[in-house]
Length: 102
Image 1 (cartoon, rainbow, N blue to C red):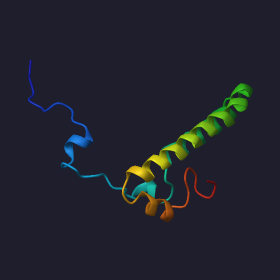
Image 2: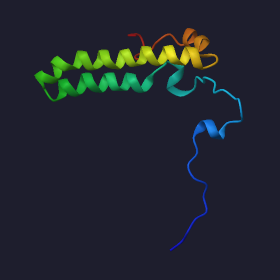
Image 3: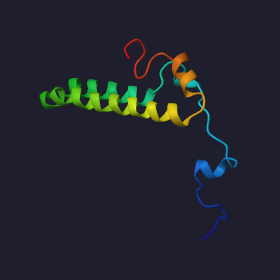
Image 4: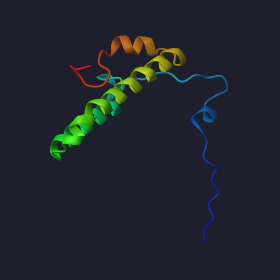
């Protein structure tokens, strides 16, 4: 049996220098939307219900999409308060979930 000497998993807060605060970055899909993963979830919720022809899913889809949107808004409030430069990033990147939609 081979034993590897690796440090245990560390959190990002431990790996950053003492007192350093994370900063916002706008690379990749974050250049166009502020929450690309939530936008993908909205697309998945919408299209899966239509593809599977689930009437129950079509009825529940607006509630699930509203829950994702609510979470994105609450996350933005937290990020604005806690993350340096997020307000400028939010002003620079117009769309929250889907480009040209919201």
